[in-house]
Length: 526
Image (cartoon, rainbow, N blue to C red):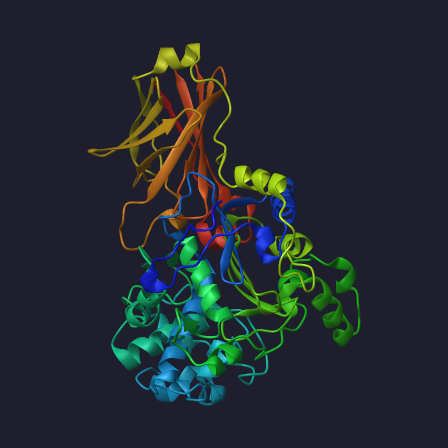
């Protein structure tokens, strides 16, 4: 670490990188946090910790890397609500505008009488009044906005919180209706360029609009900048971009979640679930979970008087104003019980009044080493076996399969292996390093659907492999612009091969709904 390292250009407002102790956080605290994450089994892909606008820790776990945008899932929602803030500031709409007035061209008749009361604020606070989530409507086709209005609004808008990506998507529709631009296009000169976002990607729906609810990919530096922008109440590099009043409203409780919901609904707190008094139940939940602190404008309020933008499997932007801290994380972790939040609160919060701590060179050096060494592990085993020598370069004829793949070839060399799958006239190849990651890209048919960019870009992958037994070759394919990976296991039995594909998402809920069932098994013969 040095005192002069910068991670943002001077045009967008550079911030410096200092030892944690100089900003009132000990290196030992950060080391303890990293130990806790590792012990729990969560998989961090990147981490940035800011205190007083200064970077005190910054790390990517290879093959994840600083320059690669990372899919944020529902963290995208907060960026969509930020676009509404700019639209309100420019007089394009007001939060109490009725949705039926902003989108008059849609058929509202099947939504019920409550649709007349639905406002932008209800969309922002996810208090529409739907009892069923729009994304469960499997018949929405290509016109998602029309599908929104096909679902009856059964509760008065503003009275009940229900987490639903439909609200975020409709905000995207409203921005496009008012401006003729997608949310991404609208935000480019107002936010993305101002804060110095680079290489961002926002997937689109069939109608060509930014998804709004998900699909945004940003670098971790950009996530941290977004958090600092909110912490500074709409100011960046000395320039006010949004009114402080908007940021304050966005990060204040606009609606209160009611149990059973979220972690309680999933059975994470069985003892609290037995509490018969709803008020007491909510009080107990607020003591142990960030999911019951209230909801702002597509932003979750948290314990410790903070707020966070979050995405599936642990994409985080946590802002703690009382501690003047921002924590940006990309990861793959099962977070139904606020796993990352618990570890952050347990280890990273500065002690009250701690603006600076005595230098701790030994601990700082250990942290420096921890933040610069190592990578995510690939399969562990042998580089070659007698089986690898027997099958290398030979083709297995595959039995009929859902991929319509006809041939598979494994070729082994000094640097690792090449896995080649033939589909029609196309040979899809992934190169796997041994005790190292080899970068590539693939449209191989067994690439899980959640890892395929919707705009047709070639999914980027880094792969590594090893022989975990004499007859079993295992590969990890890490799609490093996504949180997920695919574990591919090839088992050789004489002249026969069996190839199994396991998505890392299968450890999370709800897998079948989001990504489909497990991949089919391929079989074949030399």
